[in-house]
Amino acid sequence: IPVDPFDLVIFGGTGDLAQRKILPALFRRYCAGQWNDDVRIIAAARSAHDQAGYRAIVAESLAQHAPRQAADPGNLDGFLNRLQYLRLDASSDDGWENLSGQLTDLRIRAFYFSVGPGLFAPLAEKIRQHGLANEQTRIVVEKPFGHDLDSARALNATLASYFSENQIYRIDHYLGKETVQNLMAVRFGNMLFEPLWNSQYVDHIQITVAETVGVDGREEYYERAGAMRDMVQNHLMQLLCLIAMEPPAKFDSDAVRDEKLKVIRALDPVQPHHIVRGQYSGGPDGPGYREAVGNPRSTTESYVALRAHVSNWRWAGTPFYLRTGKRLVARSSVINVIFKDAPHSIFGAEAGRHANTLSIRLQPNEGITLKVTIKEPGQGGMRLIDVPLDMSFAEALGPGNQEAPDAYERLVMDVIRGNQTLFMRGDEVEAAWAWTDPIIAGWQARGDVPKPYDSGSTGPGDAELLMKRDGRHWQGIK
Ligand code: NAD
Image (tube, rainbow, N blue to C red):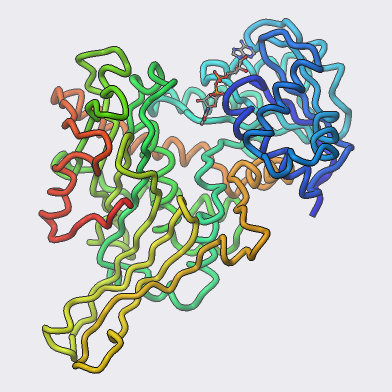
């Protein structure tokens, strides 16, 4: 369904995120017919480019990040013709009059803040000061949203002084992933799962976000953030919310976000012995973390594993194990819901113990698998094996349509549609920081040093112990 005509201003239009994600997403949606020629995209940044020079840079990015669509010159020219470049400084008045002259009256006007977080507040102020906000204005704010609870509160307060909450779109791109939305469809669109979705039937839940990359190119930011701030406070927390939340009365932005907020507020503080921090050492693939950031004494974690508890009626006693890390053996994001064993085995000890697992794979091979127990084919006895009931998106979408849409495609179009369901509300972000801050403060107070782990491994051995102590084990990253 095509969206209404809009003006979109991308602050930071020459940056990595704009070139790699935002512009390719807009381009793919253009090629899919979701918006047409009556749209204006204005890329604004500090450096000087003429229109042709900027369009050439974007054409190169599109060829790299949306190659199938960019191979059609009609598509490419059509898109580039909608694109204007504007030199502008977010922290002074340079360029703002020009921007004002390019915007169309009385239509949707979105401002995407794809710049460093230090510029979020100045941009909000400049937009108001130069009278660029209209009734239909939305702002899109990238991560990181704050560094801790105090800074997140301050940023929320500043943005709230210029825009109302229903104009502020805080991005967590994990929420735009097709499988993450499918998680809600599976939970709330089927009768099969919801009756079993509680501590009586679920043994535990594992959420893994494993990366193979290191901190390359983001050293300065990462050294101040670490895995807890960079990944757990936002992405893993959002995944946990979608797994643990109560069914909202309807799929609308406040109903969904109210339920997510209740989950975050129900989280117990994490006990120090329920958390493992790690830091990667060097290997054949590259230098270790400390060398990469140029700080031989760094105590920033590039890995976290922890056991969380949602203290409410549904989840009392069911652990949620979360882990994320860099330079691990494989790139893999997966949520595993491990159900309890059948209460009694009629097949005897020989059949072994089997538990159903629902795996929600965010990457690679987006899809959902339910592991069920069946009889091992053949004649002798009754031996049981586990087989997957597999729903892979690539297969479900059918031949010739193998591309699951990128998270940013969905999210940018939702901004235009005015749908905030897949964006974080201010109170959610603050609640997440309120849970994260004491963990980080505890490390600082104790002078905690992360455990080293080999690049290309599954993380520090202590993370295995965290599970082993509970009689459980991590399901493989690969
Ligand atoms: P970047 O450094 O590549 O780009 C920054 C952009 O901001 C450039 O276009 C630059 O010209 C512009 N800019 C800087 N100062 C400016 C000023 N005073 N006035 C106007 N423009 C100015 O950064 P990035 O990687 O594209 O990240 C942008 C934002 O998105 C950051 O907040 C980052 O944390 C967030 N983010 C990035 C990624 C990613 O993959 N790159 C992922 C998630 C979130």
